[in-house]
Structures are given as structure tokens and as C-alpha cells.
Image 1: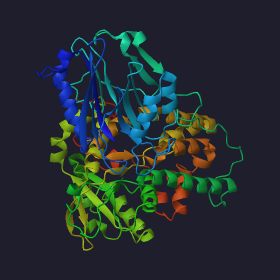
Image 2: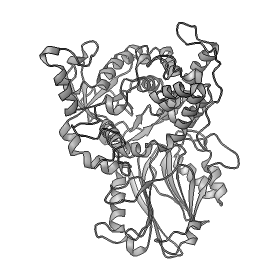
Image 3: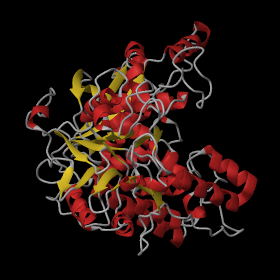
Image 4: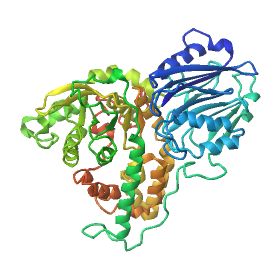
Length: 584
């Protein structure tokens, strides 16, 4: 993974030092993107025939191959800035660098169609900028699902340059920056440019992602349009059909493979990160962490991760909770002497004595319960349950940093989700010993597993039940197709900017295009049955998968959004009531 900063400008503009100038903003973004790739940083400059200068900077987080490999990749005048992982489509050996292999293929491509053909075979999260010396053209794109951030700042009189960057620097630095669309691969013909202020329409081409040999990785798939038979029985006290049993087995196999591809062959942590926590010196540090709410998605992924990590290695479970004054005030009112004992969240097995009451938010309660279920099923594993407790003072103090990172995302919902992701993946908190003593802990795991995508693919939202009520099975099919088509615009770029700011990388097993295609191919009535109650019919297939894996408690969990489970939403009275309200 890396941070990308690319600037196309006049030579004099890139050298400017004044605050707000092209040169100052460029250098600020290069420094900010260095946090995404703390292992190596480098810049390569190309002087074009027009006299314009193309500056390409990349920072590297070593995640593939035996040793860190410097970026940008440069060969025969071609240059590649690559922020991604290739999990399928191109064979990559464990000791090889996927960016270097991709660069060789792109450098050999001598036409737009050849470049598209190479990219259409890739499965994995990515964003890239590629300069083709043969064509004197600049290619840039994000993967079809938008799992990595790449922002575009078009030229303007105030900013007479073209900027591409993994981060924005905030509203003040780049007020006109926008998320790069995932619909196309963009090609900028540099021969058509004579200055940076005017980009003729003919210079920018939007290339189809579909190559000469259509691949499953070119675009999100279509949902199976088979409508359930009218007599389709409710799956209550009825033996599962052969079709349903087969779907369970296939889903486990497909999801397990996706997890394996995302947690195997992770390089050891840098020596400076080893031994920084108060734990057994004979226990190696965790290389993998799971964003862990105790919900069905994160618990299932944690269990599957256990299958593919050496048994002597811990797995960090990151569980974030916020001191929320508004919520605490409500709780105090509920605990008025006349109603003593009501309104408090319940925890199992005396866990409330092991955690601070302020931070016993819903996700902390379910997280502790699912920790016990994982321990029972995987007694050999050391699970580091990391209590990430964020005071109101700290969340308020860090708000400007977080709003700057999430820009151009700017709604109240963006902020509450960004807060939760930023602090959870920072990984600073406590783990508890067997007697409940809290020990400071900092998770340095560079791979963070997330359950994002399961609700969209398996019918986990309340709007899916509403679609069924209004339009039957066909209405539900149409809604699930909309969900898949909306995945690229669901702010994964924002999430990437949050997580990567800590020099860590998010990986989404549910959002492997192989998993997306498989789940989309299943008849809808095999995945979800809105006729059943909440916590039963929603994500029905995943609930059956969890039961098959032994996660009985997790299989009954109801859907709860991260911002509500962690209490990162609406911390003050008078805070925006609607998630789409723009923050000020």
C-alpha cells in the first residue's frame, strides 16, 4: 500500500513556497501521504515536451514481497504509483511484489486497449497513476468497488495545476477536490495540453473497464433475478432444503478463501514495533487486527481469520467506545432512583466489572460476549481484546484532524463513522489480564479486517424489508441490485483515508469481487427472508453460516450501525439530527 501525490504544473508553480500556493499544497500533501507509507518515500519528476512538469510522489507501506520496494516504479521513462493489493487475476508468488509485476505488464502495453486489458484482470483494492512514456499519456483509476482513495483537484484560476492525491489536506487546501469516479479508467493525453489551466475535453478520455476478454473483475455483477416460488416456505422449524445446505457450504468456502488471501504472507512488523507492549516477550506481535463490534460480520471473520494465522500469533480485536455526554445524560435520567436499574446495558459473565462503565456502549457489551464465544471455539488462540476508550475531550480535540482527513466527505454521518474508524484503527487502548487488570496496549497490526459489504450483499438493512413489503421478491431483488451498484459510492475512499493515516491497511473479505459475484449469483430467497423477524430473516444465509461454524450467539445478533454501537454519533445536545446534514 502507498500514498500517492501527483502534480501536473508549470515548473515555476511547483516551486512556490507561499501558503496556499501550488507548490506549498503539493509539499503538504506529500508529507501527509508519507504517513500512509512510513517505510519508504520517493518522488520522480518528468519534464514534458510542452514544458509542463509531471511530479509523481509515492510512499510505501511494505505489505508484499520479501523487502520494501521503492516507489514510484520507473523503467524506460514509464512511471507507476501503485496503491493496492492484487489478490486474484494475476499470479503473484509470496516473495514477489505485486506492484512491480503489474508495472512490467503496464510498461509493455502500448495502447489504451492494452492498458485496459491488463487492468481488467485485477482483483483487489487499488488506486494508481501510470505515466506511459510511449503514449505520453497519464492513466489513473480506482478499483471497480472504490476500495482505495484517489482524489482529483482539477485546475482553476486559483489553482493552475492538476492534482491527484490519496488525501486532500482538508477543505482549505483543496476546496474543489473530488472523489475519483470508479466508472471508468481515465486517460489524459498530455500531447493535447499546452498549459495546466485549460484541459480540453478531447484530452481526457473515459475508457471502459471491460477488456477484449471480459473478466469477472471488470465491474460489479448483476443480482440473480430468479423470483422465489409463491409457495416458498418460511425457514422456521423446517429442515433446510438441499439448495440452502449447499449455499451454506459454498458461502463458507468462498468467504474462507477470501479471508485466507487477505491474511496470509503478511511481512513481519518492523523491529521498532516489536516489544512495545507489556505482554509475554515470547509471544510474537499481532500482524492482523479485526474491527470488532461483536456483531455477526466481525465475529465470523475473526473466526475464519483464526484458521489462517499461525497458532502462536495473537489476533487483535479492536473495539472502540466513546464517552458521549448526551448518551450519558440520558442514562443518568434513566437511573433516577424511581427507575433504578433500568436502562443500563447488560453484559455477560460479570464483564461489566472488567470495563469502565462510561465505555460500556452496546458494541463493548456484544464484543465482550463474542470474545468468550471465540475463546470457547478457539482455545489455542490469544485474542487481544483491545478496549479503545475515547474521552469526549480527545474526540473534540481531534475533530479538526479527522474532518481534514475525511474531506471531501462532509456530513454528520461521515464524521461519526470517520471518528469511529480513526480511533479504532489507531489501536491505542488497553487489554485486560485474567484478573481484569488493564494494561496499556498499542496494536501495530498493519492489516485491519473489516466486515463492510455484508449488509449490502446479504440483505442486512431495514430498507430491504421495506422493499419486500412494497414490491415483493422482485422489489427486494431490485433493491439489492441498487445496493451493489452503490457500493463504489459508499465512501470507502473516506474509510481508506481514516485507516491509512495510521500506516495501516483495510481489507474487506466480503468485498472481494469473487465473493460479490458468488453471493449475487445466489437466488435472493436463499440469502434473506424478510417474512421472518429482525435478527432472523435479515442476512439469513450468513446467520446459518455462523451457526454452522459454531457461532450460536453471534448468529442471533441484530444489525447495529457502528456510530450507534460505539456512541460516536451525536455527542452534544443540538448536534445535527440527520446523518446527511453538512457539518460546519
